[in-house]
Amino acid sequence: MKPNQAAAAPTTDDDAAPLQLERFLPYRLAVLTNLVSSKLAAAYARQFNLTVAEWRIIAIVGRFPNTTASEIAERGALDKVAVSRAIASLVATGRLVRVIDPADRRRARLAMSTAGYNVYRKIVPLARDYERQLLATLAPEDLQALDRLLESLTARVRQLP
Amino acid sequence: MKPNQAAAAPTTDDDAAPLQLERFLPYRLAVLTNLVSSKLAAAYARQFNLTVAEWRIIAIVGRFPNTTASEIAERGALDKVAVSRAIASLVATGRLVRVIDPADRRRARLAMSTAGYNVYRKIVPLARDYERQLLATLAPEDLQALDRLLESLTARVRQLP
DNA sequence: TTGATTTGGTTTCATATGTAACTAATATCG
DNA sequence: CGATATTAGTTACATATGAAACCAAATCAA
Image 1 (spheres, each protein chain N blue to C red):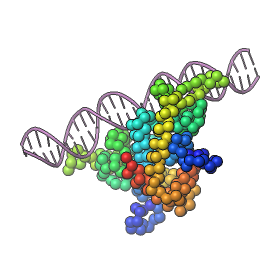
Image 2 (cartoon, protein in one colour):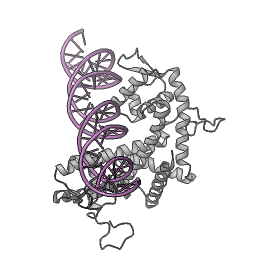
Image 3 (cartoon, each protein chain N blue to C red):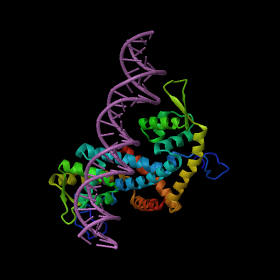
Image 4 (cartoon, rainbow over the protein chains, first blue to last red):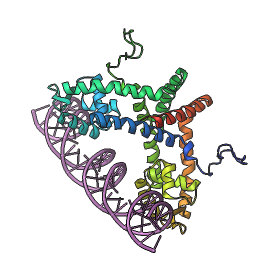
């Protein structure tokens, strides 16, 4: 590759030439995602004392009440240890209630406590608002394109080794 | 909010309704980025025994020889502790050479050793190839749109609180 | 100058995280 | 049934990470 629009090199996209990190998709994604989630995480933490994993769990239990830890892990793209710890913390701070499933006593069904639900009702609009601000400068076609690209790239990366 | 295209609700995008995590941009970005970088990181680790930070440093020093740790931190979007540790490891394994800058003896200039350069020459094509595979299913217009959206979102998030 | 401040980089310490081992309950197969 | 395998979730351990303290060199200010 040649540096953006510098002098034409004899080779097209020379594999041995320096890589421009700032043009490299995995890097760009990492930078964007870190900015987005660190800012959002700071807001969760500041206002509700929640980590990202805890927030995801709140969001999932809010939408799918009486779900289980393993379902949360799946839906939240979290590993089961993270889920287990975050649930423990949410239960300890009284925002989540665990009820062992009598039909299968290995499972525990999770539901929001009143306190948890109050957090949920405040944090969801906050999250939506943050997303809205993030997307505010994009035109409707851009939103659609973004949606499509994210789907497409995510599907694609899942196929890769 | 109402589930995608279900029955029309009287309110538009009710802020108190459940959030669909799988439609929430920060979440989607996190999932995509984690997949992308964990797969790539696995490849670095498997083949070259490099962490993501180390790989970024290699990429930066390859492109900007004789740079310093703080410049790397900036260019690589890494914090200075991470940079310090990764440099130490790369120096310890003989892939990077540190020379204290005589003009300012707090600084150290970093350059690739022969071994480091050999890694560099092998890993850059690997990285490019991974990116190529990732983007292989996108049409040229999509690539352009993706580029624009990433720039735009990254600029936008930097403005946010 | 020399004392105070800033800067480049490292170390410390406390916490977060992931892998693997583990426990308990259920499911499967002879 | 009863032995074995599987699944849900937790715990232990080793490593990664980040904030803050730290050190040394350079710069600033009197």
